[in-house]
Length: 332
Image 1 (cartoon, rainbow, N blue to C red):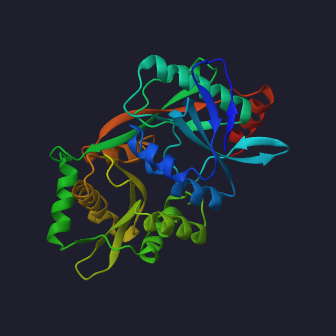
Image 2: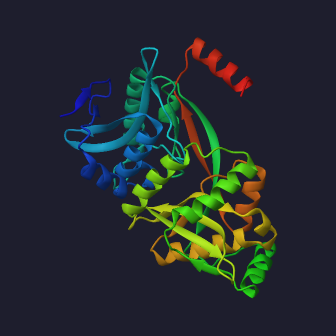
Image 3: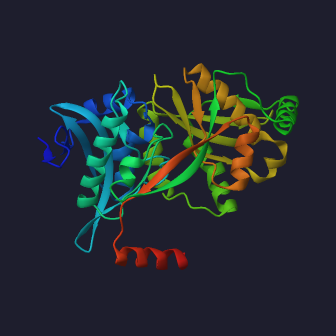
């Protein structure tokens, strides 16, 4: 069963999907040009559960064919259904059917979905895939579009890191640094937890919730780990990468490096080793998921990654909501 919402779009219909739709949903995700692990059933269910959010999944359909789809985590606040972004999610994007629809169809179904979301939820804010380069459908429905940036490494072309990165790599090779892909959450957390405390950011999830989420992603084959060890075997830098097997892109997720090993350049060495591993796993590009901050952008660009933009789209706000959000940012 599913809930249908008729709009002005005639040919298309917005449909809230039955929760048991996982198999068809994941097939649609994997075939879409916007395919990413943050849209899979495993991620959505596990992350929504960890965040205490409810989950709706919508499709824009033509007859029984899905033309576009989007997952909407949410919660109820003061009697209103409010969008709830999921922690540690790089994207929360609309997905279009494959083969790619024409421009007019994309605009029409985007407008249909944007209108449906605005009526059904408050404070919706989406991070669209870099593959979505046209946001006019959102804007024409009154949504605000803000450019964001990421860096993407081409895994099919020879690596072209900066001289500074090559020097770090030589230093790590000479020191006998070792690369491994053993799944070991305890080791990863010890490095990651130290890193987030040093950099002053929150994991958004406590240790238990993170272990549950990462464990489910690993069991589903959507997550893999890469760790750099010293010649004596001590783990000094580690990262979890997300990817859907058989799809073009891998995605950087969470990472950390021990403070005393930052001067060694092991972070850059590990990134290039991960790129090689992602290539071995059949991926063609590696999205490094974020380049909005100067130091992060510089580090990723020095690896030879290409700067790409994507869009954040925000639903129309009421005057009260704009005031409340402004006050929240001012006191953050």
